Each structure stands twice: as structure tokens, then as C-alpha cells.
Image 1 (cartoon, rainbow, N blue to C red):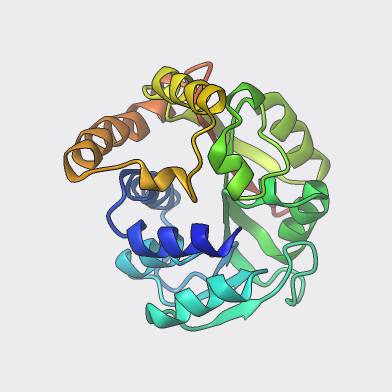
Image 2: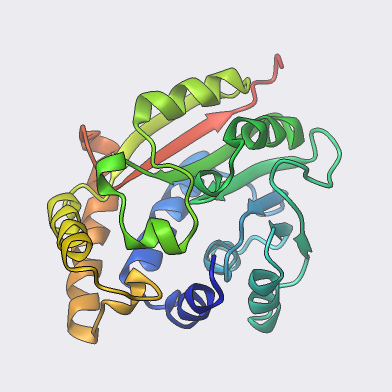
Length: 246
């Protein structure tokens, strides 16, 4: 991502509705897994530390983070997160079967060879280990944030499912989320494209009142999306496992 985009993310991720809602969703998935407190976690694509914040809040301490950008690493370190390494998702510097759980949230869409990254996740997972993956959905939603974050693609559920299975991972649960805001976000992005609004990040489009409202909506969304399994959404959530037989 561009430096300005990282600067904004680092400043807002603790309170911004989107980051807060995602952390709520990922924490809920971890609770469902009953991951032990001493489980060994790998967070791929730390960004400025949103998932690391969630894992620390949930009490997990055996956590390693990697990111390909030195600026992201620097921001994580300034926030008190240690055990952060500079590494590519397609060339993880870890032995096979080392981690009980991997998080790769809004990460693989940045990678040209996303299937190689998924195979690396499979490699470093311990047998029986789980991975939580989220990606942006639907090419028609392509917008400013995709450009400034240097995304390579947005996915449909069928596309991601095929790539996950090809990597050897067994899908346990998958669904679209952020479906309640799908239409408003689509309309805003079409408007921005037509008028050519220039921003360093969509995260700048916010206020305290708007942030509170959107968080209430998104919080409801991430609670009901796993149950309703809506046919569309701004993002995809997928939980997969490296089975013991593997």
C-alpha cells in the first residue's frame, strides 16, 4: 500500500467501524474453534496491527506476524506488538506444520500468485490446524480502496473455494459478509468513479456519528451473516482446515 494509506490505517484502525467489525467476526470464529490460549498463531499480512490487537485482546500470546512492507512492521512495533517479521506470504520463513492457526485476512488479494500463498498456508499449518481467510468480494465493487491498497483482484465465493481446495485445504465454513452495506458501498464507489474523487483511503470518509452508525450496522451484519449465508456481500469469510489425514 501507499505510505499515506498506511498512515491513515494506523491512525484509525483501533476505532474505525470496519476494523472493529472485522475483529468482532474473527474473534467469534476463534471462539467457535475453541482455540486454546497457548495455540500458536501466525498472522499473515499484519498491516498496521488490527488482527494483532484482536489476538492480544482475546488473550493469545503465542503469536507471530509477517508483512511484506517495512512500514507496516514499523507501525506494529510502535504499537507494542513484538515477534513481527518481514516476509512474503509466498515464501514464509517457517518450518512445515508449525502453526495451530493462521489468519490471512484481506491479504491474498494483494498477491499476484494467490494460489502459491494458499499452498504456503497449508504447508505451515499443523495437521488439524485452521486458517481464517477474508477477501474482498465482487469485481463490480472495485473502488478507490482497491486501487490505493494495490489489490490484484476481488473474488467470488466459487473462485476462492476452488483455489482453497486446490491448495489442499478443507473448507469448513464460508459465507459473504458486510451484506447490509453492500448497496450503499456499491453506490458510493460508482459515484466516486464518475466524479473522480481523490483520497488517500476510503477510511477518510468518516465522522464520529457516521462511525457509530456504521459500526452498529456492521456489528449486526457479522452476527447474522454466518447464519443467513447471504448470496452477496462486500467481503468473503472462509474457515478451512488442514486435516489430520494430510
